[in-house]
Image (cartoon, rainbow, N blue to C red):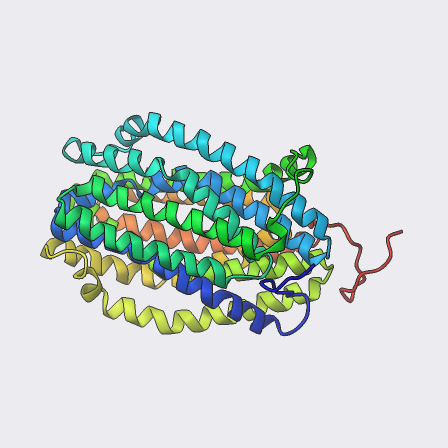
Length: 462
């Protein structure tokens, strides 16, 4: 079968594969964050501080609602990457076919629940009444777009599992341009406020989902499925849920812990809420290089686990860690010393700028720990280590909730406890991820069970 848009990562330089794969991901993720940033900038400058706080308070709940479909997409991508590494083309096609049923079912369920539960969840977060209306409008509107997010994430995850990170980039750029243009039209020209921002987001997501799917069908042979292959396959569907659900639950638990922290943030009032919204947006941008590197490593590891080459997995881990360290040495001084200039991009209020810039100084000192969550987690995900996905999510929940509640009762810390909690959570979770990697249990987690020798080469099954 012709594979003009795929890449075999089981041979050649690990660093070259990871970097070549990660760069388009980074550009795409930055474009994706661009329209999140534009949302905040447009709302903060043209609607007001309260509207910005309303959008910000929805962040953790949006992550919660999106986490199931995104977790399933990641799981499906890992299955595809391992079968692709094992050169089992029929199983690649079967997995793609059955991913449709998995993703659409999950997306519809989450979308309906999100629309119904939004008001109750926002009140549970102690969202102030004067911004509750805007927050409900924003979150309910974005929930309508969950199926588009699931479709795009699924197709993009499969393309990346096949070694193609460039194609999803093109459609993310298209989506970002559409989103920015619609933001300006809906909010500034038409005065649609928070609803306009949310509407621009879901339209742009639909554009990326449709165009990426059409491309995959016409350009990638694996997506041109026969009627027989489209028949539901119970084993593959169960396997997709078995691998994807723990990852989705990991993300869900992380989202729940962020919601608890958001409740703490809300208790300090609008100014702190606005500052936290800004620092959260900045951290989302900071995480993109780590996320891109992690996604590249997941695909690299999945293919090499499928090909029974654990020594290449270890080498990839070492090189990804070095890349993370180099990036942090460049990044930390920028955000430690230049935080106030960055915060001024979002708002004009001096009280928000003062809090936000100091908060960035606190969290920037923990950026390497943040990076070292992504690297081992990506490796373990690529291996299909679903047990750790649950452990990792529980750890983050315990840390974010435990630290925030502990520090909240130390009066001298005040609202700084919010960002101290964030930094210490990153450090603790990074240590747990590293401990799991060094335990070596990931070597036994592959879906494609192919015995290996100590040297990492396949040997005949006994």
